[in-house]
Image (cartoon, rainbow, N blue to C red; front, side):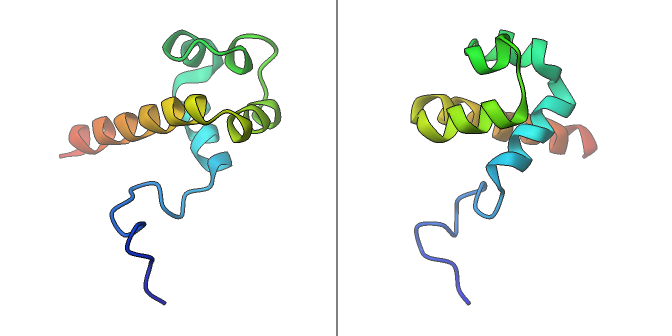
Length: 81
């Protein structure tokens, strides 16, 4: 099955939001995520579940998290080279 044309160049296509958040938390931890993106789901009693709920309802916050994820993986790829 061929991906939809609008998705073939999307680097996040096929990555679940839960995976994205979990990998960011593993790398940065909650405190640093709260400094990088100051939203309450990172700052006050953070959990994967509450973060996912918030990001699914808040497109601007989800976009910031996705941008950080893409930046983080670009950095990792460049370090490996």
